[in-house]
Image (cartoon, helix red, strand yellow):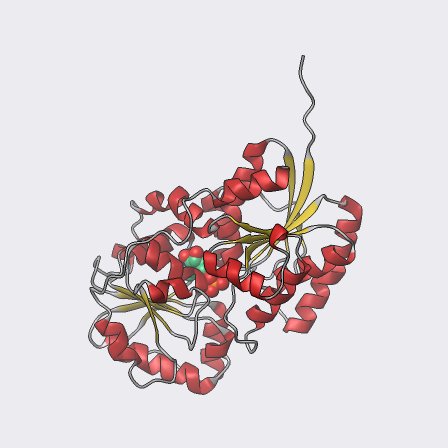
Length: 361
Ligand code: UDP
């Protein structure tokens, strides 16, 4: 006799590069429960092949069931367009929950639409805070968290942030960080990549940099200061920088260009892990890249005034460098060889499984 299992339907809404990386381990864990049907919606916020398709191919993510093809646009137009497209989809599917990730406009649109249709919202990477409301990401996170019914927190600090905002403890689940799960699942496959020789850099003898936060790219003075600082570093140690389309556009608009930094097109996850894990130092304004630096025990300098991942500052693996500070280049160069305290602030690699089990239950 076979006992029929109750299956649930979850609609996952993603649209930007870091979300594809987070979705990979979670979708896999959801499939493994055998009790959830996942319907994947890609909003189309990131649409270039090297910002989207490459991650689906490399990380074995199922082809999206729906692509809303939102394309570019300002925050208002983009979010409005998503709301318009997501609402009829959710009305039609009527899922048991909507799963959202991180802090992009796709996160916000998914949370708002689902909450208004009284569909439970599950937020992965809940409780992350920069406490800087000038950042569009901070607005998206705060709203998404307060509309969510399941708040999956990566760290102890995220849990404290949610409690401090009065979120009901019963809704908060401290599961660990799904990017750590992704690293454990996929990083080994980066070992046979040829990216270092392709771009003519030697293991342990270069700085890897990424820049894309609006606060850095949209302010010409900050972007000019960062460009000059990274060029100063490159005079002493090669700097390789996979250039985000937003940064490329901003540099063109502001008439800025690198003299010595070697820029390349955005790379896939496996090439990125190869570049990260072999770097002497990582200098970045990315959230995910700060954590990945720590996963591969590479010192990190964060090119921002604050960070959400403060545990890495406390552990000594990461340092903040204010983008307008004249000392950034020296700070990056002096980070070579720096080590922090060993710790496991992001769980034990079972965050995705805990999330999937919670959703199935
Ligand atoms: N990443 C990548 N290729 C690149 C740059 C970044 O695969 O050229 C990955 C990186 O390894 C990390 C994620 O993208 O997993 C971080 O995304 P991003 O910096 O765009 O966003 P954030 O984490 O700041 O939200």
